[in-house]
Image (cartoon, rainbow, N blue to C red; front, side):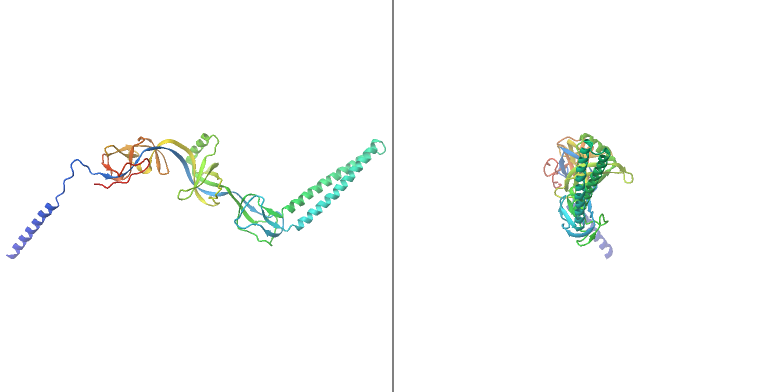
Length: 385
């Protein structure tokens, strides 16, 4: 008898609890006429000049690289540069023992003086015989012999002058000078060593960093755009920028070369740009991102790139209407540059588009922002009700 009474009490307790829960958790009616708002960030469509760039990965190269080798043999007497030093063309880099070459020059000068004296004597003799021939005192044959002797002496003087020039050149080569402006590298030979003319190992490698070149590649599909830009520029070189990994512009220069063939293995076109590099922000061997300016779209309609959404019928953006509802607007797009997309059709200047929070939206949804966004900026989202 106790068991049925217990079951009845449990059933009464459960029914009472269910009634109390339903009373206290009854949903509150929504405020009449006030739809739920979705927090979004918006941006205003604006017009601006948009540069169009073609980008590629590049490598900095020295404009000139010279391995300094001795041009005469001998003992390397002294080094006149420090490793990493910036030198100018004509600066003295090293001295080779000049004594053998000084002696050879002196010998050539002595021979030249001897030949000059012989030539002067032969010239006087020729003139004397010519006068005698004119008075018929000497034969014409003797005059011809003196003329031949004079010609021989003249040739000997020319040969001795060439020998002097050669000896002087060899002597000058004992002073090793920088042929270009640049930076010295690691010293490859120490003073006191015997060096030989045009030896495989140079004394030092000299690299010219002002100006510097950047070799970079772009896809072959961009070839026509490049050619059109060059045609429009009427011979003026296209502008090229070198950027670091974080997008900082390191240097600005000019396009020097479009390679004469496309790489069939990679389908890329190689370009060369030259930069003044006065601040030496570019260094040989450095990897940089390079981009070449091929066009500037003047007063183009632009929106932040994140405002454009992909759709089944093409790209679109949510436009905020005056009543704070949104409608999807189909778009025709131009290029995207530095986070900004050019709009060729679908929007007007001053339109406000949603740039954050699109995944929560559907046509006609009510949105709320903290305040109207300035052109090209987003507004902070307000809290949803």
